[in-house]
Length: 163
Length: 163
DNA sequence: GATAAAGGTTCCAGCGGTGGTAAGGTCAAG
DNA sequence: CTTGACCTTACCACCGCTGGAACCTTTATC
Image (cartoon, rainbow over all chains, first blue to last red; front, side, top):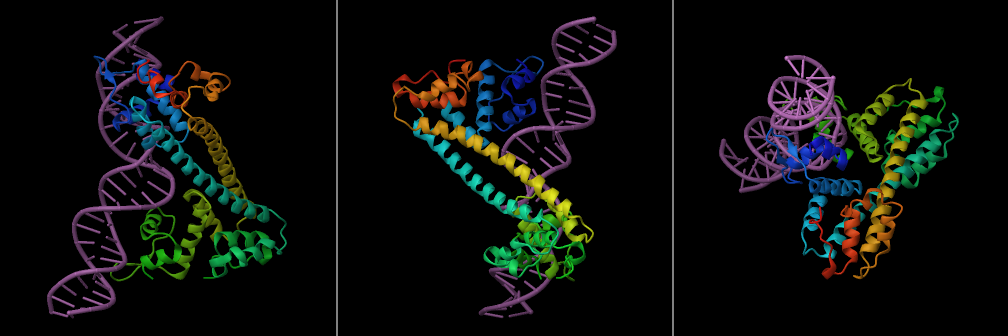
């Protein structure tokens, strides 16, 4: 089985398969007389394993360990679970971060989208609780976008000019 | 103001500031007689803008456009909103992907974590609806982890040996 | 004045996982 | 025999930095 067929069968591109071989994630494939890589069903099987693990978001480093565990008949269930749980924790962190970002951005978009009148409630919010340095830095992206979007064109603040 | 102070004031590391200068995101800083970069308050201000935008997850490419808009007095509100909305769409996609992955992984963890008895409901799920190739590939990561975790040690399937 | 520490400077390499390119060898079919 | 599809190695580029090496400048201390 050539690399192209192995790629199609596993879902990993030929390019990436070579990369995995170079980096030692998978052992070097057997070569034919003419130098072509030859993949067995077992090789494809391993590649598919990798493909699925990557789709679950496991890093190559984690997959390396998963593969080791896979081939180790004396593995402990706890090891696998630990990997999965650790990965889950990472995903949880990413999710929280992403959601926080979305909340902020959504807030911004919702208020930026409004009419062209100068009164903008979010300005007060920024100047109040979540302001911190925004109070001192009236041209931070958040503040700028909001204040600028909220003002009519003839009252545009002197952006890019004030400091 | 030296690069270290600018870094501390903006929240961007000195290394990254140089990187931004090299890549043209920010204009080259003025140099002192001895070759040190000198940053004005306006420069720091711009850096802080960039820092906040990045914390909102905007790519450097997007930030480049945001900076252009920032400095363009004749900008259109729609342009800014379009950028923000496009970015929001990207975040939405990432969120959905992340959540789907989490759901799968959570499912796996929950069932892998159970006792050591061989009966595992998720096996039936895998063999049924969401199985597709899993039916043909009993050693896919999902199937493997689940089946292996579900079986007692003396009944471990011939993993890494079957194909 | 010497010295050392703390800053600055440049350039080069690397992370992961590709995508693209080039320049060539090989295989199957017409 | 030629054509075209596939394979090979090898390199550069991307994202957004980050670290290190090797060297220069400023500042502080003895």
